[in-house]
Image 1 (tube, each protein chain N blue to C red):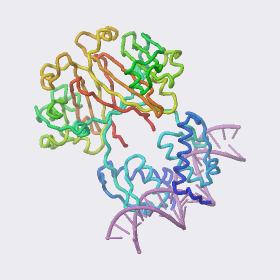
Image 2 (tube, rainbow over the protein chains, first blue to last red; image 1 turned 90 degrees about the vertical axis):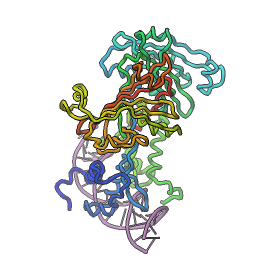
Image 3 (tube, each protein chain N blue to C red; image 1 turned 45 degrees about the vertical axis):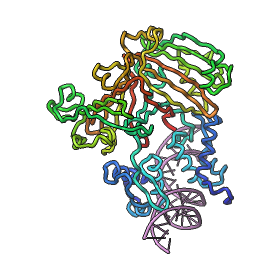
Image 4 (tube, rainbow over the protein chains, first blue to last red; image 1 turned 60 degrees about the horizontal axis):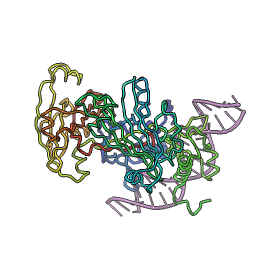
Length: 241
Length: 241
DNA sequence: TAGTGGTCTAGACCACGTA
DNA sequence: ACGTGGTCTAGACCACTAG
């Protein structure tokens, strides 16, 4: 029964067989595919082997299984654009650029009323605030204005910002966090445009980001860069797959 | 042996046990966690049950397993921002807005030399070209200028654009595609600003997108919207998890 | 009632890494 | 040599869905 080509692993062989039929279009979204016992017969393996191949494909988003009914090809998920450059230093490093910071402001102060509200803190709570200008090869790339709830980053005032960003530092802390961000085209204030050395008539790209975890809002930031810059580059892929 | 709380499934119980220790920080990235046989003893189940719990967590990005060495907590992946609104009609529908299109141009014509090069086609090849203005509640939202290699969408001239976008139509076609996009802040031409009814002094958000598959470049598009608009909203999450 | 997938077991053999 | 994870089996019981 054990054939010489056994080495590749029957589980993967079965999974590949199914995936090939899906990507080729032979089996379309919504189609009922052969049952576990049918595949057991086709491949001459035990049901557990087939079952785990199917389970993997379900986790990978290729199949939907309904107990009692059968196994179906999953409807294609939405496509999403993924932006990986959430961290300026990493982004510059990826381009093999030279990084430099200028810290314009760094303070621990009382939250303004609107800030306290955004963080869902009571009036008079402490907030860490920083304004940072990031340079790539001595040209200003990004202006960052960030507020952090100091409970989540107690050593905020002491961090060495020349080698790590506040964002990457925050992301290292457990538990893993969630967030949302918004991209807009704006002009920016005179002061901001001067700091970023934005050419006349050129707009700016603004990124507003808020990050939170179960215990509350962690940080709110606004990043600004010249519209002249290469912009943000994202990758498009299926949201399951 | 079978206890009353069996119902929840031992596999998930074991997985939850491990995930809880990871998210709580008790087990940190890189840490070696108990072996399969150790967990077998702890939970009083067979090794296969433990194994499949571990396998699921590996697929979900929580663990890294090295045969012969042991099971380790995975290093946290990079954080990515995900933008789901790749399709204007879906985006407007999600906001319960009213959608309307205005097709400014729709033609099948010879590719210009630079276009042919972008598509990696030989000179004189045919290209489908469309300029489309998308309205939400009768206000212009997005101006789309798109080129498509007609081999991938033979019925491009016939598609009803009032109910589906060219993008969503393309994404339905097999095989699944990949792409990249770039966001920039621009001013836009006079004509473009007039079509989008952009207020004086307000810049525009530009999305340049290219999508391809194994057989070649499928489509190149440029989307423009007023910087006044709510912008694009993305979600931040771990790239594994 | 017959067929589906979901789960679990107790044993087996293997390739790999560490010591 | 020993322990690790990777794989597979042949059987079992369950809950669910269909005809």
